[in-house]
Amino acid sequence: MLLVKLNNSVVLNIDSAVTQWMIYIQQANIATFLHTIAHVFSPILVIIYMCILLLPFLKRRIVMPFMEVMVGYISMEIIKVSVARTRPADKLVNVLGYSFPSAHTFEIILVLLVLLGIIKQILRNTKTLYFIQIFLFSITFLVLFSRLYLRVHFFSDVAAGVFLAYGWHSIWQNIANKLTKNLHNC
Image (cartoon, rainbow, N blue to C red):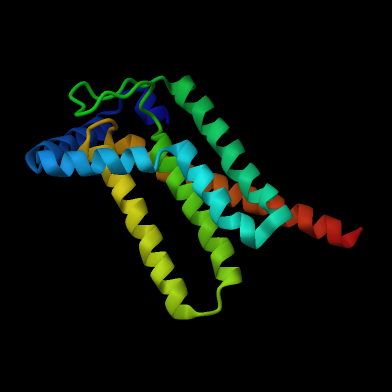
């Protein structure tokens, strides 16, 4: 975060190189498709999809995964406002708000991690599990790529979204494991 806030030259050079590559490969039909992907998998909709998918399996236990993604989302938004990085000037679509970190990226990665953890516990059929994993990773890739291709984020925004989501998920899992252990010991 500090490197982005201080406009570190290495970060800026990487961001610029990725942006130039996105400009080079740009095509109108791909931009339209990725814009649709970005709408269908917006951060709030991703949370709603997760709850709909998990509700039949978890019922009352859905509170912890829901809290993980909601508290994570709020924390990410606080970081976004604190850093206050403006979006790229040459974006292909009109979006509001700050750029760093990418909310789409953060939320899709966090929900992916939560879903994979739960699905691995529920499913025993390895072929079905493999298909679901491929599907989820494909959607995740499309969302991350859309942020760069539509030039609404710099590469460092997307990378930060990935790392922050992994970090938040790890912290949340440690807390949840300790709480579960303490409840079993009482």
